Amino acid sequence: AGSGTRGSADGVGEASEFRYPTEVAISADGSTLLVGSNGGLRQVCVAAPPPPPSFAPLVVPPSTFSADMANTWGDATLPTGLVTFIVGDDEERYEHVSKCVLCVRSVFFRTMFGIGMKE
Image (cartoon, rainbow, N blue to C red; front, side, top):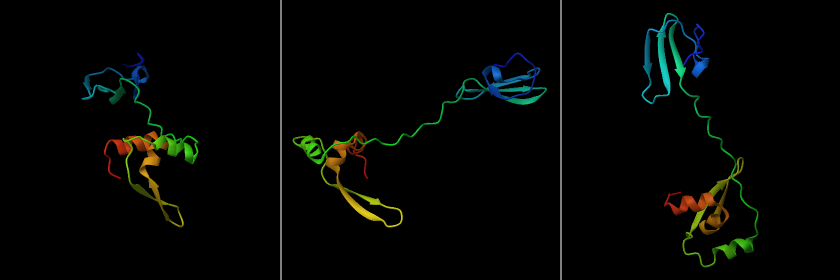
């Protein structure tokens, strides 16, 4: 770690700079070096931190009601019952939706109901 140039800068790998290191410690997870030197205490990231997760919107494939119903026919693994959603900003309304239809239309809901997650 360190750029080879004397200085005083925290950074990732070679972007960090320090003068006359006197003490070195490493974090428990091995991702960060702490270097004590004449310029004070410097933090050197061994590797760049991972990027934050991106949350893409859920994409529901287009289909028709009859196609959805055909996909539910004879599939004993689909859950039964209804789930209730509260919808709206200014005026809230309750929407009761079949768990079976949600599972046919969305892998997300099929996984959620399939692992026994309680709604």
